[in-house]
Length: 152
Image 1 (cartoon, rainbow, N blue to C red):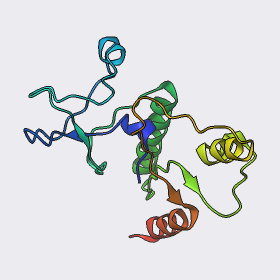
Image 2 (image 1 turned 180 degrees about the horizontal axis):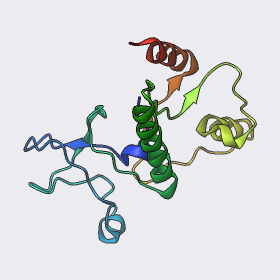
Image 3 (image 1 turned 45 degrees about the horizontal axis):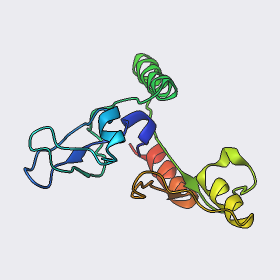
């Protein structure tokens, strides 16, 4: 499993020239002022397309929070290897499912959206409205953890 905070915005591919992977930096103020929301290929300047994150993709922590999470993974790996203990690292983002509180803002975007809908407020769209997030059901997370910890 992977998360956006550790991988940054992830890898992209250029449908025009085939460059893959592309790891774009933050968009420039010039691009934002011109309402160019999508990342552009450094080779041909065409719009990039996001692609699924692969296990061997480069890690690019996008915040202090992400850097500390990644550092914790390194600590687990170092300690477990030194002690001869097996380990599995999971990175889950946007887990949802039964029993989730929709009233607690710390439970994520589903809480925020459902609160706004119940109050009759609009759901804000940012930039061009094409932003996306991956959600994973808690039962799928439970299955992944079960498989991960039972793997030899």
